[in-house]
Every structure is written in C-alpha cells, then in structure tokens.
Image (cartoon, rainbow, N blue to C red; front, top):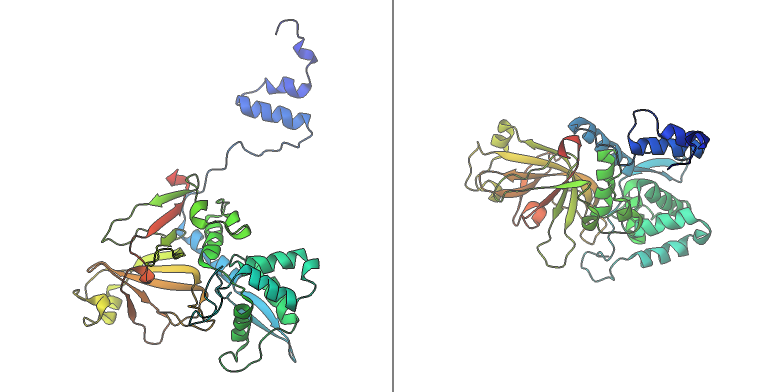
Length: 364
C-alpha cells in the first residue's frame, strides 16, 4: 500500500518477503521468528509415507507381538517371572462355553476390579488400564499394569485343575476378571506399528471406536479381490472377515506374510480323501497366509481352536487351495501338521474378504 514505509515493518515480516521459499514457507518462517520459535518446523501436510519394505514391516510386527507378551512376577520363594500373551476379551462376548452366563462387559470388569483393588479410584492410570482391558482394547502396557496389580493383590488363582502352570493361572485371572484384547484392538495397534506412523486408529483403543469406520481413505487403500482367486494381501495389510451369522462382529487380522507353499510340502500334506484337497492333485498351488490377531476363546478361557491354541493373541496360518477354491487352517507347529478344512471360507467366515492396505510412497 502507498504511504507505508516497509523498512519500519518487523524484521521477521521483512524477511518473509525475501529468499526463494514458497509463500507459505516464507510466512511460516516469519511467524516462527516473531514468536520465538513456537511455530517450529511442522510441515503443512503429513510427511510422505516411506516406500514399502516387507522385512521392515515384519520386524515391526514381530516387535509389537513381543510387546503384547507381557512379563508378570508371580509371588513365591523365590518370585518367578512368566511371559504371557493377553487373553481374549470382547465387549458383550461369551462368559462360558455354553453361553449360559451373562455377556462380558466393561461395566462388569470394572466392578470386579474395583472390588479387588480398593484404591482403584485414586489411581487414574490403573483405572484407565482396567477400563481399556475390560473393553478388549488395552495396550500392552495397560494389560500388564492391571494384571500385575491383581496378582499383587492376591487374586491369582491357585495351581489346580486345568491351570497348574503360571501362564495358565495368569490367563485364568484375566478371563475371570474380563481382561484382554479383541481382534480389532490388536489389529489397530499392529497396523500402526507396522506402518511406522500414525494411521488415525488411536480412537479404536482409546475410545472403543469401530475399526471399520476408522479406516480413512487418506491412510488406506482397499485392495480389490477376485472371487475364486488367491487373496491379494501382503505383510502390513488388514483383513476384515464377515461372520456368516447376520449381526455378528466378524473378525480382523493383521497380515504377517503371504507365500506359496513349497511343492514338496504340498505333496507330503496332500490327502485326496480330505475335503481341503478334494479334486486336486499333489501339484496344486497352495497359498499360505500368516496372520496376527486376538482370536476368539469360544466362551472358555482354555478353549482350543482349530490350530490347537487357546484364545487370545496368537500368530496363525490360513491356507488356500487355488485348484478348488477351498480354505483351511494349518498349524505347522504341531508334531504331525495337517490342514483342517474351513467349510464356508477363511476361518469359517464368508469368503468375501476385505483387504485394507496402509498407503506407502508408491501407493499415493
């Protein structure tokens, strides 16, 4: 404007008009200097995601899985330390194998924990941890905090019956109090760790938000799938399964790996009289999907799933027979591994899987 002596403007504003920076960057630098560095170097937009690296992604998933395997001190002479993956817990989930008991809820969990820990109200961190674990959305640190507090308060079940080991006793304690992780709670954290950046999923664990509704198009791409073809998925992806019963919650998993089974192994496992192999030869193509999640306990703290594992956080494998479009589960940790046929689809859920992929530099 005419009549204004530009040399009398603040030095920061003068410098904003100089140099080869963009108009926004010049303005940011001027404001930063004028405010004594309070603006900082925060960019106007989120940084570009790094390029995809399978090994880095898997290493991050391994790290998170190990974080979930918390250490607990068991009182004794001397004290013992045991590492335990969290039990399965889902808001409104079953409370016993027959489904006769009242559904589990965070309200019920908080009532039980409050009775066992009279000082809970005076400990905000512990109270938040108990609430998150009762909702099935606890972080590893929260799960460890509330479980150890209950152990220290003398709530660990005695060694008897089906829970004689220290790890079984800890899991029984978690089940009795309604503490643990559900599939969405595990997968939301795993996805964030695997991507190495904020994916906007914090509310899933902090507030109990829906994982499905938290997957923004700014952070995720939907990977198209073809019926009758192997599932397109890679390490770091999230998979959503639809439950065959309308109204049920379905299931979420985090992909750790996707490979094609070695032909020699296919030939060894192939049994033409079994449903998974029906109509295919020993040369059929079999895809192996290695997956992390918190798996349903079937209403029983010690219930064993298709792969011989109790419910809760675990790494499992699905297999897909490209020769007959059939799914199964495969536990290669067993002494004599076999493939168990999944009649409906993967994990006995509907075959219309949905795969979500965090955006990377090559996918923008």
